[in-house]
Each structure stands twice: as C-alpha cells, then as structure tokens.
Length: 150
Image (cartoon, rainbow, N blue to C red):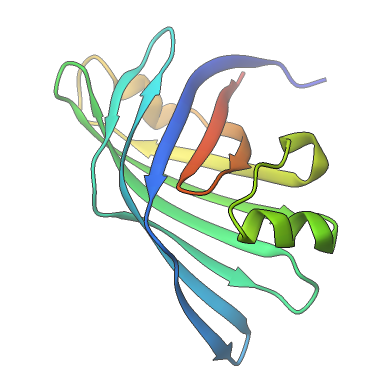
C-alpha cells in the first residue's frame, strides 16, 4: 500500500483550446492557463498566466496530458510544476465535458503525476517529492486535488 498526504487543492483558469485536428498522432490541443489558485496545509498561492496544458487526443479517445505551469506562493516564491496525466471515459461523458457541461469527476478517469522545481529555501522540499492528482474538468476551470506520495 502506498501512503499519501494531501498537498493542495488547485483550480486552474483556462482559455479556449487551440486545436489542430489533423496531427499524424491524433488531435492536438493547446490549452493556455490564464491564472488560478492553490491552497493546502503547507503550500498556498496563485497560478501565474502563461502556463499550458498540451494534450494529444489519441485514436482510442484517451487524452494524454502534458502540463507546465508556474506557481507563485503567498511568500512570492516562484515554483515550476510539470505534470503528465490522462483523461478518459465514456463517449457521452467526454462529449458533455467538451460542451462545458458539469460532470461529476466519478464519471470519468482524470489522473496526473506532478514534479516541482523550487528554489533553495522554504519550499525546496518540493524538489524531492512526486505528487499525484485527481482531476475534474469544468467549462473554464481545471480542478486538481494533489497528494504527496510518501
């Protein structure tokens, strides 16, 4: 059994996806992150604009996720976070999500692994952990509940 510890709740504000439907590997989506916030017992702050979620929608309908965002902690520390994940589910559920409709996260699979780059100091412990997240996609927001793997 693997133990985890809550790390943070993150809400990323996202812009309209930029879509390239005819890629040789599948549909490519570039989704700009425009802001947001995160909060937890040991880590709080905001997401800075300029990050992104680059997705590949595979032939089997699975979305491969490649996330790169910048976190700014309440103490002004800047931390780079990179994540890899996947989202999939029944076609009707994914169609509802694509339309911006509310869908309970239990109806589809959305998981992410996360690693961090933090400067020396108060938050450098992040450089030595891997986190996992359970996600939810809403119209203009992506929600991640992240947990440190112990």
